[in-house]
Image (tube, rainbow, N blue to C red; front, side, top):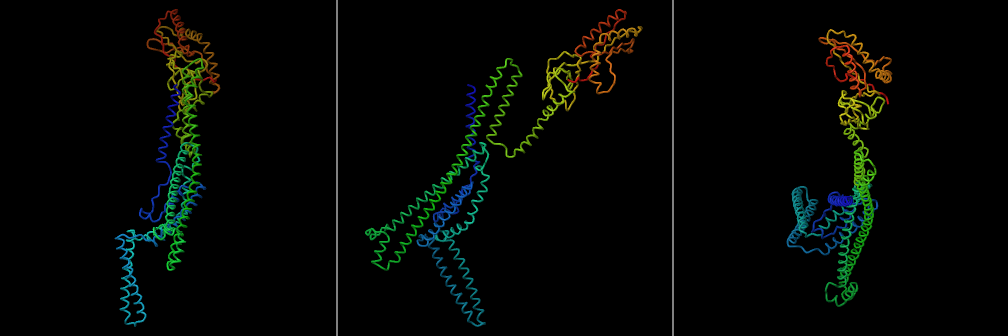
Length: 623
């Protein structure tokens, strides 16, 4: 049940994370171009509809593959042709059927006509003066030159005033033909720009998320969202084209209705014939109206043909956008499959990690002895598996780093600095495994702590503390762990020949007036007898371990006895070798024999020295 709860929690967490990621991607990360603002205002956009071309230019910036680039070029070509025909039709309608002027526009138009008449009269005067200059004598040319300059200046002022009035008429909306001509000039100036739109867009789109080759969840999610946004823009473009086709169909019906006599005149309603038939009947009755009638019929047929061509262009654009949408949907489906695969891998890794804990519990429960080390091993396995699972999930979500070599180098440098002690400790393990290293069971001293070696691991050395060499063989019960870096950066003492030998000494005070020589000889015999076996073994081990590296230097483990004056008497000092774990027992036996000696000789005894061993051998036996 606990595992089920964990699975439900993890699934909920993944779904919530996916929702948050989708919200962030759709709001901030989708690489779609901004919507272009129309280059004409609302009043001017009613004169000429440039939306097909503007939409085609906007979509051309989204072309990310050679197939899309080809479709974008064709769409631009057809949209440009449709807008050219729209401009031609608008210009013709503005010429043949000018819109009624407002009161302010009529005043401006009247002023323009007056200026045009004034300019015409001034131009005639200038031409007249120029003719006179060619005919008059030299003495009369100066006055004519002055008059010519004055008329030319007045003509220039009148021309500037006419230009200003025409601009004012355009701003008031009274000169639709001029407005359309200006828009047409702007449209034609953009032809060269259209040729570079697709190519530059294709180059820029190579860095777009949809061009990614990564199989990570993050990259494929961004690509899918961008393609989805592109598909939505193509769908909106198709809806605009359908609306344009409906508008052209309405205009065609209106023209056909007018051509068939739908203007409401009684004579045309009674006849019930087509436009050309009506024209023929009227021509038979009145030959004077034949030419205007035929001209009107030809204009209507031309308008119908233009509408048909524009309708075909819109249908072609709709077909191009439909093919483009199919390409986008196909690529979007591929990324959707990749996202599903990434999610499957994430859920698979998550399930393995979630099932690892009960599986490890079952495996370790089969072990009969449940020790703390096994528990630690189980925790370590579970943690390692969780970290591995997390790393795999992050790899599926974000993908491998783009600069993998640089990342590995930086990570290696950082780990080297952060894990310096562990790295040096691991190297120190090899030093400790050498001939002069330490082994389990050795008696060593590391950083002032002495004890018996329990374990030498790859990173740590564990000692059973003995508290001091005076208590050799009597552990304190505490385990001390050292990082193996002490073998490289510091030093250690190994008291681990086979016998673990120590030099010990005892002191026997003798009062004044007693000859120390017999006592010294007797003590010499006692110490030699008690330590003979140990001395012989110690000499053998010393020669085997130390002498090969120091030449033929002699070494003796025989005990020595010396006399030292002290105050009113002397002190006999006996120095001998003993095993570290046995030094207390050895000293007790010697004390017993010496006390017995002093009793026989009737020598008063003084308190003996009970100090710890003075020194020890520090040679390590090779293993």
